[in-house]
Image (cartoon, rainbow, N blue to C red; front, top):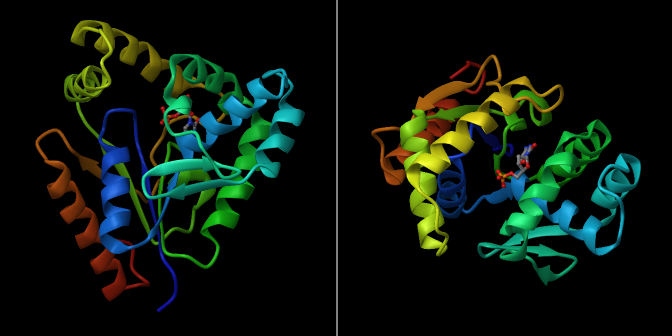
Length: 225
Ligand code: DC
């Protein structure tokens, strides 16, 4: 059987990270967290003193570092950066990096090389729409603003951060608007993506739906699922 790619796109808080990670673990497939990749590039650019707005240097950097996902950790050139890339400082630095077309182009090439010849679960806003337009299964995970904010609130609290549900809901709605309207890498479902609304689904139920989609695709590889 040929290798297969499943793409999970969707807004923050729709549950795509936990779904993608668990799905990859359950299937024994390679997992690509593209948000972590943008974060890692921003982190190394800061470390090396490369101005974030110098998009051609940042793009070259993106192609020169080696990012590996291993046992739930993110390694950059062998160094575990999992915690550091989630800091507020790196979150802020990642935005201009992810907005730059040359960096997105470089990242697209890197992500395609990572997936080459493998079974892959890949997660990010543009995976089905831009990076892997021929992926066998494309899913756009959605959830209501309240459900998404509530998940993020729980996440933030588990990381010991002191924010309220209302603050998260408000910053999420600003971020959604910016995401929908940004000139490159805008958040939109691929035309052939399956929309999966996760409000009332547990993570396990989401995984079951995804596995059903993959199985259906294996049964009828020529048909759109
Ligand atoms: O999903 P996340 O919060 O880890 O993503 C980090 C940043 O990278 C965020 O600003 C969205 C952006 N991003 C992107 O532009 N394209 C992707 N495929 C993944 C993330």
